[in-house]
Length: 173
Image 1 (cartoon, rainbow, N blue to C red):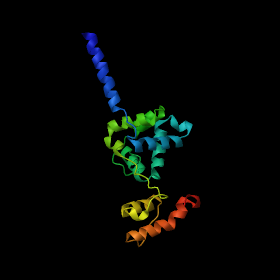
Image 2: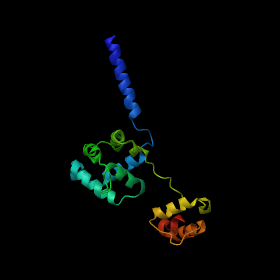
Image 3: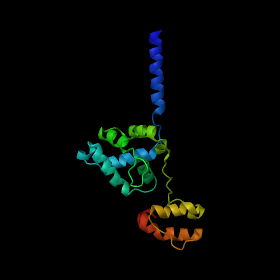
Image 4: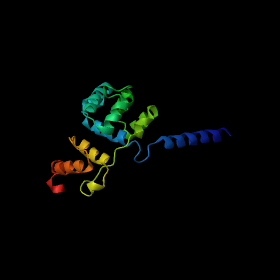
């Protein structure tokens, strides 16, 4: 009887662990951002959590969009309301994989895994006239470009067409 209950307890513990593991595509911003950040670290910084935290704050200064929001949630930005950088820096110093770090972070703040990258628009195969103005604005924002005086959809399309050679290169057109 006792052995049976221990077996059941182990089975339940294993089931819970599997349920908490990240599924494919889950926590994508967290995983990609931590992998990108970890690739920037030198060997001497990789072992020290405090140096990792300082490097992460520098990394976050140039972040945009979803990466910037991720940095905000972790406490990597000056305007961050909270800070759980230690939950990222310590496991990173132990060479823990990014997906496992994100599992730990999700336990502290579930909204970290709610972040999703926006779908990228394939400008080679899309009819700009069929896109919404919001999507046209996003293209310009991703390029760090403005559209001064743009009021109508045709204005945004014209501006994107002007900038396409600069951002896509001649061979891609």
